[in-house]
Length: 212
Image 1 (cartoon, helix red, strand yellow):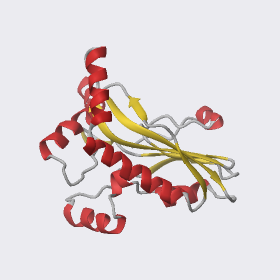
Image 2 (cartoon, one colour):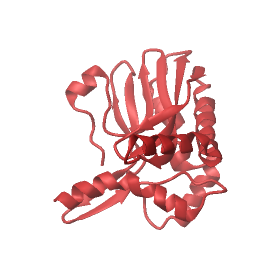
Image 3 (spheres, one colour):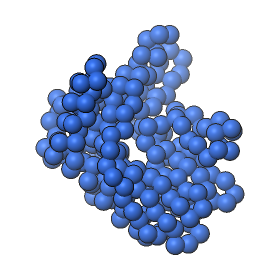
Image 4 (cartoon, helix red, strand yellow):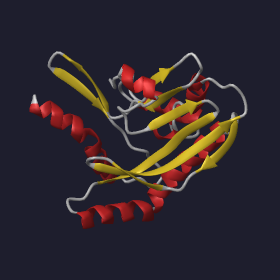
């Protein structure tokens, strides 16, 4: 599973191991993000830019992104004043995502764990509407998610802290490893396209395992 940040990172208030921040609280300021919709990286700058434009232009992926943004904003509105930033592209080594930063200013002394409880599970891993989606997941998935997609992070005595979503992770024991990743599924999702979209998400861990 994803490691907790090293003590030096905790002192700086930085959580590094996962691509998706669940929530960060520092005093009255809360930061989070909607990360939904993905494309691979291109082999050339031109191909990379073409994939990025495809992300921005895709009605399906923009629909996924909007669902996540609206849900997060609604959840945070119970704690303070919420602001939505400009949508952009989050580029990782072999994949890129639509990303919308979301901030809030707290009305009261809200502990970061209260924010974690309100935001977890995110629409990307829990579905919408949440209760019906979770019931469907429990009925149809043939395995126990365990730690997959759980909040991973730290908090201090002041109630500040930062948590990431434990996605694109793995559990290893002996000579076996189980890897976890997923996609956001909407009404017009194509199974073959979703499968292709999934491959870059597990590729970094696969590459490391294949080196062993």
